Amino acid sequence: MNPVESSDRTMTSSRPIPPRAAFYVLASIVISLLAASSAPTPLYAAYQAEWGFTPITTTVVFGIYAIAVLSSLLVFGKLSDHVGRRPVLIAAIAAQAVAMVVFSTAGGVDELLLARIIQGLSTGAALGAVGAAMMDIDRPRGTMANAFVPGLGTATGALVSGFVVQYLPAPTHAIYLGLLVVFVLQAIAVSLIDETVARERGALASLVPEIKLPRTVRGAVLAAAPVIFAVWALAGFYGSLGPALIRTLVGSTSAVYGGLGLFVLAIVAAMSVLALRKAQTTTVMYTGIAALVAGVALTLLAIHWSSPALFFVGTAVAGLGFGSGFQGGIRTVLPLTRPHESSGVLSLLFVTSYLGMGIPSVVAGILVVHGGGLIQTSEEYGALVIVLALLALVALLLRGRPQPVHGLTVASGPAVAGRRPVEAESAERVS
Image 1: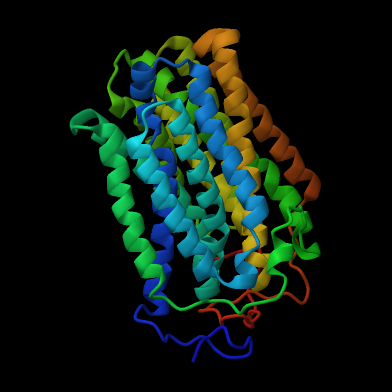
Image 2 (image 1 turned 90 degrees about the vertical axis):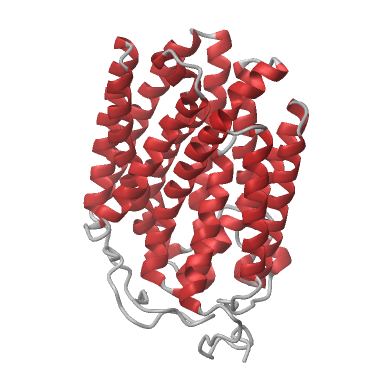
């Protein structure tokens, strides 16, 4: 029986991949999407040397991806709530595969920009759908996975790409062709899993961009958004200015160093999600803000003293802030959503993330060329992240302790396709 035929029927596995295995397939898609997004980071120096563009171009290439993701999230963010998760995911993965082909055959900046646009549009379309699908299968574990796997994917892409660039032939082709194979296999796997949500009318209307939040999550989003914006602004720093800055501090042109900063930040972020998964959400949020401020402060001292060792220590501490802040934001909001709201709300959280990642990094690229140069711009960027973190702290203090929403419950076991959760669990804690 097809699970999308009725919202009153339980989800049964009629396809070869059962729900538990499907959960891990979906998580692997987030990892590969974010790995692909960070894969070009160690390659920017090679592109710049080959094609002779300026640091402004580097940050524009980085920023255009964020803009494409934002546009896609706003247009396609709620589509899977209406047509189902599988159609959106298969189409998005196919587009991601096309982006890998364009990357691997790029001969100049124009092709690089085109590849980033296709990549951003497909990533934005997929993120809300795949994150909501994981929550459909297992709501608590899906909430945690939405906080954990983005960091793991970002770290994997940055480091693997750095080693490919440094040690393998044809680095600007090899990493993308490898990812192409991964996406083809994942598209096949998605076709073999069951749909997790019932279809609803209004698919075309859902494509009209709008910032609309269910009343039950508005307060939570207002509390979480400043933290999410701040931590992803930090990720934008390591993705755009980080490679050049680290190579300057270390005094090496190695591509591995180009991806090492983003790897350290992202892998510590991912590990912090696991380490703090049973802590209270408010504790996680405050930990994230404190670690973000402390970590960025250490990196600023490292830049001032030209100390690579201190820079990576500060990066690790900031990674704790990144993971805790993002996890806290996700856990503050997602447990309050209903199944047919999950994709849209998650997409809006990613809109906040990519605004934080894209806007400051593009401005920073302009300042590197027309302002005070790489070191001064990096110091100014770090100071901005600290200010954003402190503003997030003020927002949390003004809101106070989150209160459970009466009448809204969160499932603690595998979700029923298309049905609202039936087992109560506190929105304050997801284990």
